[in-house]
Amino acid sequence: MPSVAPVRRFLPLLAWFGWSAGLALLSARGAESAPASGGGTVTGRVTYKADSARPWPLGRYYLSGGALAEAVVAIDGPGLSAPASTPKTIWMDQNNFQFVPEIAAIRAGDSVRFTNSDEALHNVMTFQGPEPFNVNLMQGREHTHLFASGRGLEQQILLTCVYHAAMRGWVYVFEHPFYAVTPKDGAFRLENVPPGEYQLRVVHPAGELSWQQTVTVKSGAPLEIEIALSPDQKKK
Amino acid sequence: MTRRDLLKAGFATAAAGLTLPLWKAFALPPAKPGEELVPFLNMPRTPPNRLDWEMLQDWLTPQDQVFGVQHYGIPEFDESKFRLEITGLVNKPMTFTMEQLRARAKKDQLMTLECSGNGSSPGFMNAVYNSKWTGTLLAPILKECGIKPGAKEIVFFGKDKQEELLRPATKRELKVEVPFGRSMSVDDALSENLMLAYDRNGAPLLKANGAPLRLIVPGWYGVANVKWLTRIDVRNRRYMGKYMGRDYVTVRGERRADGIEYVESSVTRIRLKSVIGRVTRQPAQNGQIPLRAIGAAWNDGTEITKVEVKVDGGEWRSAVLDKTPHEKFCWRFFSIDLGNLAPGKHTLVSRAFDAAGHVQPAAEDDEIALKKTYWEAYQQWPREIELA
Image (tube, rainbow over all chains, first blue to last red; front, side, top):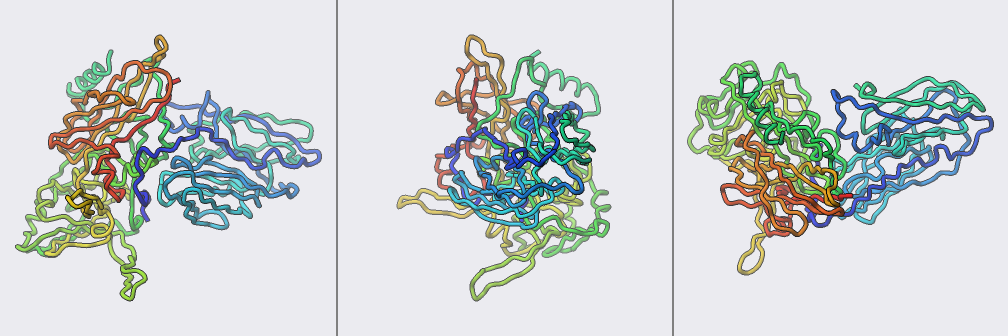
């Protein structure tokens, strides 16, 4: 299979579609989960300090005044549990030859509804996750996939389009609600976290950045943390 | 100091005896004070391993912007046992180790390599890169082997193989494992400066780029540059492998007196193309925004004579073609000061001309509009911007 797959048919260039820059980041539940009695709060901001010796040109999509957008922040640790919740469905479009949004964090049991707003035939495919899938999407069609289980930041689910290899999207599926995707200001807020010691982790799949730190969450004592990333956190 | 001055200074330094050759010293000068990138509205985010047009800077493409295509995946094999065979209609079949090939006369080839599907969709105009290949020429090897009379084609086989299904869902369905192969006429193979390359940009080839040996065909689309090249076979019949006979075939309508007739042809030499790469602006002056653009134009090695740029529905205006670096099979950078534009949305587009009389067509022109397949997508490439 070609790693750069050409499209199946030619599209006149004038058939551009308007590209909405409104890349609303999807965090289906995150901090909106049902409160756990006596839980703590973890808040903060993810930043990125650029290094001209190790430039990240694509950072222009994700950096604003040093704040890092589209990073997934989550806590991880043994015994982390939360009450079951009502499954939700989030929307990921294929628009102007990219996944919009490119990244989604959801809870196990949630679904993602994929649509195609382009004239071209697209496809959504992943080899990863407990249930790999591969489906073609004509313009106006949709496909909803249930992500029944997941391993949080341990398992990124990379989405691609077999016809347009430049298209990338990511889904992270959590067994708990303590996760967030950073918006443009890099801020995150995890609420009702059961007291305990955890790993606070950050992954930025597009930038191949990964960070973690041990944190202790206490009831009634909000924890605020600035997470300063740099090229040092780039996966080797 | 103007950009032109900077370029002159850079090349004067290089020419003064530094070890770097001219082309290696070349990169566009850094942005002027107050100069800002104007992002394109109609270009999806650039992923890694693709050319990042908005950040176009280096004439030689950085490794992290180099694309790769494999049709049968990256083959697994023991490179220490790698051999290149010359077989078929030759007086003296030969086999080479990499050491023997590296010991032969060495040649550098600067070349722009483009995927023939590049430009076939709005999300796919970034599979092109410029680099220096090093290897040994094929023609002397073929001469040593002695091509027999009657030879018509030379086939280049890679080590990558895959099962192909022929005549599917018919009584004569056939499943057979075949190596990736491409071919060209004996005349083309002897006259096109074909090279057996083992280094790129001064370092051994990467496996994904075809290591240890890749055929380099200057001026031809990427598919002709067979990776993991392991056998060169001289034949007296047309080779009709999938990627010669069925894929990489352009279907184009041609106007005849009684209507349009569709003709299939092989994807071979790179068509003339230009693309606006990076657009920058200066702070507004009296409500108008100074704008400039740079880009690249390339083809099969025919001299590029002119690039023009048009803003919205205005007149075509000549861009400045960089005099250096200027290598036959490489892209040429161009630049143009677009003057002061009003705030709002604008469309910029370029077109190239070459010495053979080719003019890069618009998407609506027959040679593009009547093309039914996606390869050879060399139509003009409008860029949309918004000035605030």
